[in-house]
Every structure is written in C-alpha cells, then in structure tokens.
Amino acid sequence: MRSSLRGAGAAAAATALAVVVAGSWFGYQQLAGPSCSGQIRLSVAAAPEIQPAVKAAADQWVSDGAAVGGTCIAVDVASAEPVDVAAAVATKHGASLGGVGEPSGTAVTPDVWVPDSSSWLLRLKNGGATAFAPANGASIARSPVVVAVPEPVASTRLGWPGKKLTWADLLAQVTSSKPLHAGIVEPTRDAAGLSGLLSLSAAASLTGKDDQVKAQEAMTGALRALATGRSSLRQDLLNRFPRSSSPTAIANALNAAALSEEDVMSYNQTKPPVPLAALYLDPAPVPLDYPFAVLPGVEPAKASAARVLFEVLTTPGFRNRLAAQSLRGPDGTWGDGFKAPQGAPSPAGGATTPPIGQGGTGGLDPSAIQRVTTTWTVATQPGRLLAVIDVSGSMKKPVATARNFTREQVTVAAASQGLNLFDDSWSIGLWTFSTELVGAQDWKPLVPINPLSSNRGKILQTLAGIKPKDNGDTGLYDTVLAAYKAVQQDWEPGKVNSVVLFTDGKNEDAKGISRATLLEQLRKIKDPEQPVRVIIIGIGTEVSKSELESIAGEADGAAFVAQDPSKIGEIFLQAISQRSDAPPR
Image 1 (cartoon, rainbow, N blue to C red):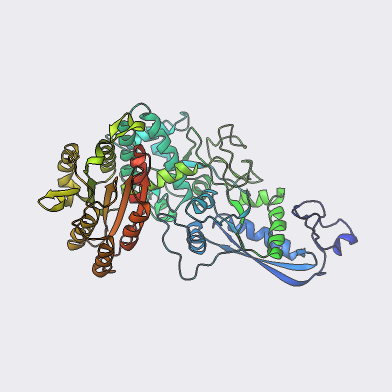
Image 2 (tube, helix red, strand yellow):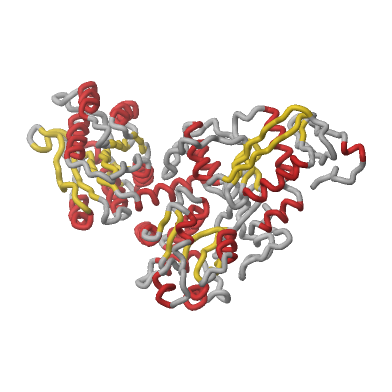
C-alpha cells in the first residue's frame, strides 16, 4: 500500500483521510483503530474472475479503518457478469446493446463497475446512452486475449509452440476444407469473444483488401464456422473442449476458441485430461483491461470513497492478489506466483499490445465494434424477411461516390452482398414497387418468401434483373401496408419476421391511401403475439426522414437514411442487426 502504512507511528492511528485539492486523487491511510463515524457504503460489481482480488483488497482496507473525511467506509464487492450489469446500465440510460437482452428482474446498477473490458463502456456510450460518462475508467488489471487450442491439436496441426501464428493463419484453418472445430462465446455478450472476432474480421479484410467480395466471403465463412460452435456462456464453451485424451474425443471436440489468458490458466489448473495451449496470435488482439468505472449519478461522498478505493487497487500488493487469480497488472506485468502459459509474451506484452486502460477506450475502434457486432447478428440470428425495392424513375440517378452507378444498381448490389451473409436458415422473399406496376397495384411480388436453401439462386438472379420504371413514381404507403400484411399472413414462430424496404423518395401516389390511413391500418392489424417489424432505408436526400420514422415507428421498426447512397450496404447491416429478438417458440 502507498505512503502511510502500519508502523508509520501513533500519529497515523489517529489520522483520517482528507481531500487534498478539489479534483485531485485521495491518499489513503491504514488506521490502527476506529476513529471515524457514520458510514459510506460503496457498492462494487466486478467481473467474476477479478472479484476475489478486489474483495480481498477492499476487505483489508475496511478492516484497517477505511475512511474519507472522518466518515467510515464500507465496501460491498459483488461478483457480476459484465453482460448482466451492461443490460441494467443500458436500461437505466436508454442505450441499445444488440444481443445483450433485457436485464434480470433483480439486476441493479452499482456505484462502481469493474467489467472485464472497456469495450462495454464504449458500446454503452455508442448505443445511445449520451449521458453515460463514467468517471475514471482506468485499468486495474489485464488479461491478453488468446486462442485456446487443445495441446495435441496445437502441436500437430498448428506447429505450437515453435511456430508463431497470425490471425490470417487461423482464418485459413477455420474455413479450410477440413476446418478446425472452432467456437466462440457470443461476441455481443462476451468481451474476449468480441476481441477475437475483431481480429478475425481484420484478417478477412486484409485477405480481400483488393476485392471486397472476396473479403466478405472470407468473413462470412469465418462467421458461419464460428456460429456452429457458439455458446452464450463462457463455461459452456469451456466444457466442450475434449474431456478425454482419446484421438476420437479430441477430433470431435472443440478445437479453437478466443478466450482470455486467465480462462486458459484457470482451466488448466483443474488438471483436465487434455490441457489447453494459449496461442498468442499476431497482431495482438485487444486485451481484457478491467476498467474501474465510477458510474454516473453517484453521490459525491461515494465518488470520494471510490477514488480512494482505486488507489488501493493500484498498489504492488494488489498486483500479487491479481496473480493469484491468473491476472496481470494493468501494464501487462505480473505479481508473485503468476505462472505464465508457454509462449506468453514477456511481461509488458510487447510493443504490439494495444494501449488499453488509459481513460478506458484507447485502442478500441467504435465503428469496428459496431460493424463486427452487426455483421455477426445478421449472420447468426435466424429470420424471415421480405425485401422490397423501389424501382421508381428517380432510382436511375447516378451516384457520384459509387463510380456513377445508379441508385438502383447500388441498392441491388448492397442487397446481393447482404444476401451472402444469411445462412440457409433464413427465409427471404423479394418485391419491387413504384406506381401501377401490376395494373393499378403499386407493388410487384417477384420471389415468394421461402428458405434460402431453395430460394437463394432465384433471388440473386431476380435481383440482377431489376430495372427502374420509366416515369414511375413512389407508391410508398400502399406498398408498406401490403408488405406488412404479406409477412404477417404466414408469420413464423422462432424467427424475427420483418419487412425491409428501400426507397429514394416520398409517397407520390395520389390514388393511394394517405399516411394517416396507413398508420391507422397498421395500428389496427398489429398483433403483439405475432409481431412484424418494418425497417425502412431511405436513399439520398429527397426522402423525408420524419415520414419514414412515423411509418416504421408504428410498425415496431426503425428508419435509416443513407444520404450518400454508396453507404447503403453499411446501413443495411446496421438496420438488420437491430431487429428485436425472436420471440420464443
């Protein structure tokens, strides 16, 4: 511990903690006896693997007479999965975190949160919690993210420990004709899984850096390989590693997964029949960094106590407590008793280790996180979807940022590429719309909604033949209502049933229904037991965002506007990933 420790003399026994300067860090002092009054009770929620170390340090501090300004401090340190706290914080601050779900009925937000990664703080802020600004956020521990592989597989197939592997090497292994049986903890719910997926995504992008289609194919292949072995819980994933040393058991078990160094060390401490090798791939993925986050709204006295607790958790003694939990200090060095896995980088982690933990988000790219989580959700969450594409005359306009391809061509390309992300569990259909496409009818069904196992080729072929209608206007309102009814009619349980409509204009059908009639009809036919979600993607600058939002809002959906039509593909992924969770069967 810092400065005034036991043995510092009788004066230390009577000295309480004091504020040095407003906004400065507090020193703390170990007291020989009770000289404080009242009580500040600080609640701390810490990731399960670090909770014992935090609790032991806090308990020792309290036992020694922790106080701030003459007031005694009590600290409650609970073990809490980061995803559970994130769900509660998201609900409190109005954030949307895809894949996290709703908080449990007993979930509460603590005064101080120590999740396993700063990525949670960044996702909350970028998920719409605009007022979410936790104090501090500096790292108190670290655990590199590794690829865990059974030792026999690592040595015979991957050349461990002599060969240094890259994420591109792993990508090739999981997408080969004889792939490794790879798995992942849901990356929307697990920081190590997210870190691994970010690295794998970057490797896929480099694989196809001169060919976007090739890059997407590489990423899609990796996602589907991982999705077959995914788990919602880390312990469930660990249980799928080989439980016997027989060659058959090893071959049929999980062979690779992105986990933390601490996960591998703790697993091997149980003396499993087949130990895990920790592979430190290049470039180093974002590590788990355990930020100390004082959540917004904490009263000043508790904030003061939290600042002192943070100092307790930055001492050499705490580093030794971390070592007992198979965790490193925040700079990558380790305390007494830490037994690094074979091949672990030398203490500070090497020059390639991302600079996490200084204020909470260094080394993390919010756009990359959003892109990879949305792509994951689209590729792995089953759905039933009707795509409806505008073919009015304005879709002929060229897009300067897309080499002067027309809006129609850009939209069709985005839909075609997006289709490649969906696996055969999806059911998809295709319509076009303008005005009077089929007699007086504004919409034209092209491909019925059916599983992609039998429908994929037909949809791709039909997409390629879509052309704008000369002098066609935008029959938006009639089309939305008809599409909603079509999806509702054959609603399928266990999937998200949705309409995704692309348009570059406002409603222009004077013979059709009004917006008021459309909204009234949607309210009338909505069935909470069989929800249909309408997602509208506006293209260009002529659309009315307020018009689209009013329609999508009435249909439990969302509206997005791509003012630059070349960005339709990105917005399409974002829109699909924000579908509500599928209802239970």
